[in-house]
Length: 500
Image 1 (cartoon, one colour):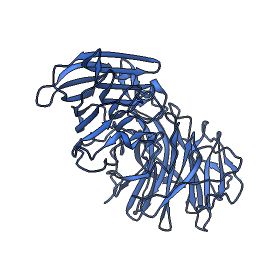
Image 2 (cartoon, helix red, strand yellow):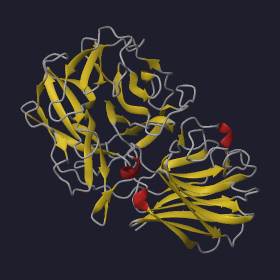
Image 3 (cartoon, one colour):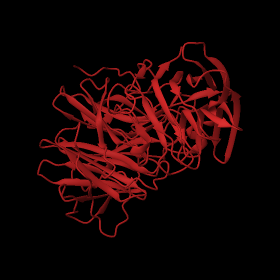
Image 4 (cartoon, helix red, strand yellow):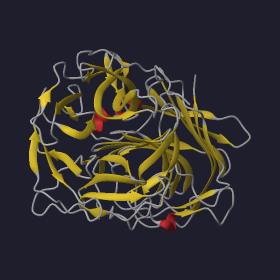
C-alpha cells in the first residue's frame, strides 16, 4: 500500500504528542508521549502512513516503572522508536522519576523489556533522548540539555555511555531547543530538532554536518516547519517531529500540532497535541516541507464497547498506577464493573477511572449505568478529564438521602456542583455531548427519551486553562469520596460517537 499523498491530517487525532516513527520493510511503527497515563507509550502500525492500528504499549506492566506521585504532565516524555538488526529500541524519559531509559522488543506488539536505565553518572538527565545506529556499529545517544543538544556513544544493551556527553549544537533559529534526532542520510549527518517552546513560537529546524559530532551547519531556510506566522490558522504549534523514508524512497515527517476552535474572537484547544504528517522534498541536500498544514481528516469512526472480552481493549487508559481492585470484568460478563475507591479525580492516588482519548470536537460520550448509592456522596458516571485540577463529572450520587444527578466542574481552585432530581430507575443512560461552546449533559431511562439536564462552558476544559501537555480523556468513573464505596457501578454500551 502506498502512502496517501497529500495526507489526511491529523493521522492520529486526539492526545498523541511528540510522535516518533520507524519503518521495517513496508511496515511503519509509531509511538507518542503519554505522560502520567497508563499503559504508556502506545505502539501503532500502518502500511500507508494514514491508517493506524494500536498494537499495544511498551509500558504495560505496573512493575516496569514506578508511576506513584507522578504529577499531571510529568511521566513519559518524548520517546524515540528505532529498529536495528531485528530488534526494536525505544528510548524515553520518566520525568519526575528515574530519568532516561531504554526498552526493547523483538515484536513491536510486545512484550517489551523492563527498562534499562541510561547511566549518565552525575549529569542531570534532561529529557527528549534519541538514538542513531550508524553504519559502523556506533550508537549515538542524543538528547536535550538545558537549551542545547548533547551526545555520547552508547552501549544499547547495558545503557552505559561509552564516551563523555558533549555539546554538539545550540539553537539555530530561535531558542529552547528540544526533541533532537540525529540521522545518517547519504554522506551527511542531519540533526532535526524543535525550537521556540511548545506554543505560538513552536517550529522545527535542521542542521547538517559531515561528522556526527559536528560542526553543524544550519539550514538556510530554517525553520523548515512552523505556523507561528499564521496567527489565525486553526492548525497551530506545529513542530517536534521525526523523519522516515518509505520503501519507494519518499521521505515523510510526522510531527505534533494542535487544532484550535474559536469562540468570540478567542481560540482554544482541548483535544491535545495531535500527530500530523507531511511529505519531505530534498532540494540541494536540504529538506523542504510545503505548507500550510490543514485539517483534512474525516471524523474518526465511532467507538463502542460492550465489554465482551475478559480484558479491556488497548485503547482504554488509567492515570498513574491502576489499582486492579477497582476494575472487574469477570463478575458480570458483558459489563465493566467499577468499585469506587477513596480517591477522586482531584487526587494523585489511583482512582476508579478508565478513559479513552477524546479525538473529535463534536461528540456524544455515553454509557448505560446501573448504580445505586448506598450512602452519602458515593458516585458513579461519566467524566471528561484534562488534569487533576481540570475535569467535569456527570454522575449519579446520593445527597441528603436522595438519589440525584450531579454535574461537577472543577477548574483550578474553583469547584461548582449542580444537583438534579432523578425520576427514573437505577438502570439509566448518561450522555455528555460536545458541540459549539458547550458540553451538554443528558440522562434518562434505558428504553426512553433522554432529557437535556445540564450544561458547562467547554472553554474551561482546555490546555489554555491548565497549561499542561495532555488532551481531554473521556472516561467512566466511580468514587466513594474519601473512603471506598460500598456500592459498585456497572457500565455497558460505552460509546464515543461523532455529532453532525
